[in-house]
Image (cartoon, rainbow, N blue to C red; front, side, top):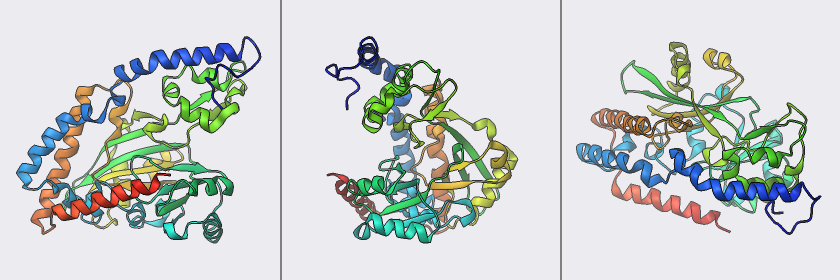
Amino acid sequence: MQLLDSQVTKPPGFWDSLAAYWHRQSQNSLFLIKLRSWEYWPFWVIYTPVLVYYGWLSLKARSWFFFSASNPGIENGGMRGESKMTVLNKIEGKYKPKTLFFRHLTLTSDAIVDQMMLANFWFPIIAKPDRGERGFGVEKLDSQAELTQYLTQHRQDLIVQEYVAEPLELGVFYYRFPGEATRTVYSIVVKDFLGVTGDGRLSIARLLARNERALLQREALEKHYGDGLNEVLQAGETRLLMPIGNHCRGTKFLNGNHLITPELRAVFDRISLPVSGFHYGRFDLRCRSIEHLLRGETIRIVELNGVGSEPAHIYQPGFSIWEGWRVLLQHWRVPYAISRANHRLGVPYMTLGEAWGFYQRSRANKQAEKP
């Protein structure tokens, strides 16, 4: 089904105008949307100053892979390709959702459903590759039929989690130096999922045509919802369209640094101190409310990402690129200092051979995902 297929016959005056409007909006505006919002700029544009600074830090550390010592308890410090399940297993059970791990050789929907029943949870679920990156392969699945279809497209080791329906999703960046009491929460991103609120008159598609982020997700929305985008929601009715809190899925990242308080730091001290070999990274979590977050209640950590994660609050619309560069440089200054401190305590840096091995495994995982 193609929303922009001009040959589809629909009631005159509605579908033709809708298709033409969305087509005009998307074709004329996508370039301008990306141009004026640096969060959509190419990786090399945003990261060129950061890579220059990273090169300088590498020279000072005498290792291109100094970052690997930032988190001795996580493969390559959590730069890329680490096992999400291995990291998640380090977190106390009360802070994470029910989670299952499956080797790709044993992946069948029946086997997964059997283990879900034994673990006492059911659909909807979140499925994702154990060694995936940047939200790739992360999907909310509502039935066994959807799980079966998902398995035809993903052939890696797999994580299956119960879906956490708490309304608030955040990424909390936390670090602590080895052997020191100083601990810091320095970045909080609040995730605003892509959705619409009805007015009783316009279809979902028409409402989405007014949303720049939705225009960028047009093809994915058409593919997933098809004719469902023609539905007219009642006035005030809200419909969540992209349940995965990832930037590439249309989620808006908001700066939540005003939430950083001594109480919040104490919460993440309690969560992180038992995590062996962890000093620097981002907790991706869901909880019921800010009040619950500050009390350490209803927190469910779906992932803990190491040195390869970003302080994502910089992607709030309107955030200055200059301030973004300042934060990204700080993002590398801190793990450099932590890595150097750990190295003096005997933690080795990753060797070139080890780095090449991680790269090869990461490449093999991506190849396994191709049809």
